Length: 217
Image 1: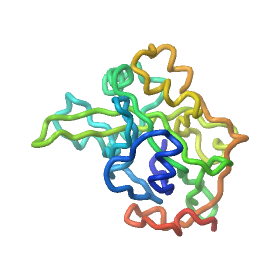
Image 2: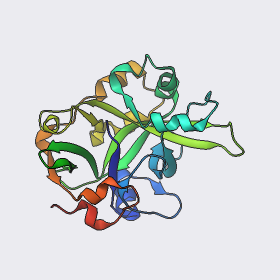
Image 3: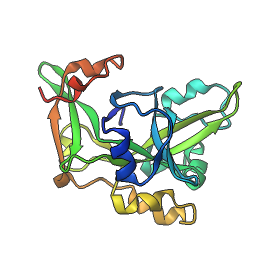
């Protein structure tokens, strides 16, 4: 699964990398965690960065707490799950990141590891979004799609988020492209273009969110 990630680039860098407007006040996250409002690009015109809560709440849900169990969506079963089938067809998004974390079992306990791209650039994880109208105000939420880990990442965890190649990001957002043509995009990113290193166990607490969390230990 993917339960934590980072997006530490500033708003201007994100705007230039993805060619979009950044709505609202930009805030970096060194320890992005479920239930937080985080930056995504929705498949709506005009494309812009919006802030949605991590943990997808289906539009038919009676209780928004279901989102706590839907931070990830497995690529292999998207068409089988009622919670994800309709968003896959109609509500796709880019989840903006520049690293993600997994925990590796060691003799001294679980060690958080940070995965990044070798070029250091922000990247887009494939996501789904939904809008829930069961409360006083609409609640917009998202989920990160995961796939099997590449050989490098598998040494830490058997799953990884779907990191889209830059040339396929707009395809993922394009409502005119059939879902059957998009599913082949949901594959492991090339391990030879990634790096991983250990970070502080302070990452274990979502209340910690500062630059020291992305430093190698």
